[in-house]
Amino acid sequence: MSLNFTHDPARRSWVDSANLPDADFPLQNLPFGVFRTSGNPTRRLGVAIGDRILDLRAAAAAGLLPEPVIPASQHPSLNALLALGAPAWSAVRARLSELLDAASPVAELRQRVETCLVPMRSATLLLPAHIGDYTDFYASIHHATNVGSMLRPENPLLPNYKWVPIGYHGRGSSIVASGAAIRRPHGQLKPADAPAPVFAPCKNLDYELEIGAFVGPGNALGERLPLSAAPQHLFGIVLLNDWSARDIQTWEYQPLGPFLSKNFASTISPWVVTLEALAPFRVPAMPRPASDPAPLPYLVDHYDATHGGLDLTLEVWLLTAKMRLAGDTPHRISRGKFTEMYWTLGQLLAHHASNGCNLSPGDLLGSGTVSGTARDTRGCLLEYTWRGTDPLRLPNGEERKFLADGDEVILRGYAERPGARRIGLGECRGLIMPAG
Image (cartoon, one colour):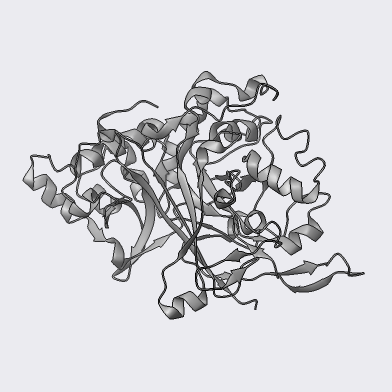
């Protein structure tokens, strides 16, 4: 994916809020989402620019969009746009970039665009796509090693990990947009010293810091997608919190893996940042030690090896009920790097389709928990507190082994480097409510 004029860090927008140094949504970003307003409850596609939303339905009616994307702009979700493929995605990005550029000389055109802008504060942000299927992977070797060390200290990493991208099929119907309340789930719990399980509210509720990637055109049943085609089939990314009930998970995960401990809720951020917007932050895939096996041929591609990584910084923040009452600001728990993932997003896509499994526009692929080696880079409380044996200590004196009712978890992410405009992923928020 090559750089073009839309990535030029010197360009500015006539939407002033997009030009602030720490703006998540500058002219170089232009992420896609779905919104509605109190004055217009219709679900509409939008593009974020600073603190405004460009209404794509209104832009199409004003004759501002390229012809191929006009029908897709009328849909209540991004699925139709995702199905169009990379040339259409690039065309609409280029057109919007031109329309919102401060250097645009046509005043009449700017006036037409202004009529399509909606203040973000007056909008409700919704799920960006209809997610037909959701698959969560386990792509961080540090996360896999940490968790394995708790369960199997003598053999933390199972022998298949370095050969095959491990994943499980999640539940698309329980994915919610940022800001939705998360109710503590019930399930079967069996303490190690108990003779039998009980059915009760989860005690060890956890978050997982992940990236979710939206699939574009996809493939027909029985066909494979080569790794070289991944850039044509991955549209963009969101922040993903794959909520986890660790005590339910401990009892149920053998022999078939996660089930009710994972499918009660997952939260995603509302704005899909396109992989084209992130082209300046492409980096080589994580280097593998010489002692590790080389990936099998279907998981090898030169472009993916040299550009398959993404230089993203990902953070977890916590706001407890006590902090909220005191007027305190959220506390940052961890900050990790997506460059440390053992498998790339392209490899996850290619492996998923390698058996002929059909991927569809709007399918979501989760990266798995993003963790590093240091404690403050671990992307879940299971790792951070080492299964509750070393609690998180907050500045106000509170401690957490796992999440309490009233806790709000906030995920944030961004990409930045010298010579490029900072690109933000926005926020992914979820407030824990008591079990019903």
